Length: 281
Image (cartoon, one colour):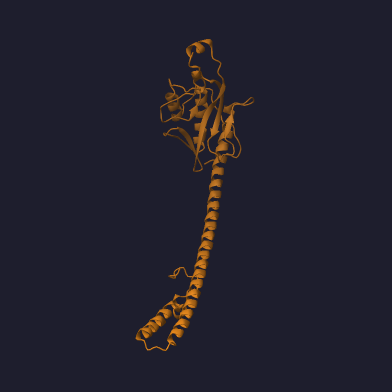
């Protein structure tokens, strides 16, 4: 791919000579086409350039787009159209798909109803249009990608769009560069976010371990304290002068039970390390 380092002049002929296939399809698709409320040509054809102009500007728009297509392809850039609505014209620049369009500026003015309108809509005044639309014949080439540093090249008081084609192609290259830069920035941002997420998750994991260790410590201390209280009680019971067999059985059972709840007699259940695989965690 040839990179344009500065805007170069690209010739736009006054007449259509050996038109590009997409130019031919665009002209054919708008033949006897209907228009929308602004006068912009409509077409049901799924394969044509994204040209949004009135009938009066169609020939000029196709001349500009034809010169643009040929200039792009001569520089190794691929141009295609999308068959899905809304229709799109897409230029592949350095592996990036960039959507472009050619638009005519339509001026909207307040509608001034004539006497015939008042008679026609009498009793239904709400149906009278609020605005009317005037085609200006002013055309613009647009890069429809928010990454693009510049997005519009237009007719002006001192220039015609035909003289802006080199600058427009330069803008496409700059847009492709910006897209790559933004993608790389998003990748770096994602890496940073992922690292931050891992750090937060690790902090949360260690906090959970710390909390569970504290809970287990308090539980074991309470169990040990309870076991010692029970032993003191058993000792008092054993001092009773009684040959009751039931009391002897009760003392034997009480000692066995106390040994079960005493955590110091079960060191294998005392988690001294922050091990999430330990059954207590």
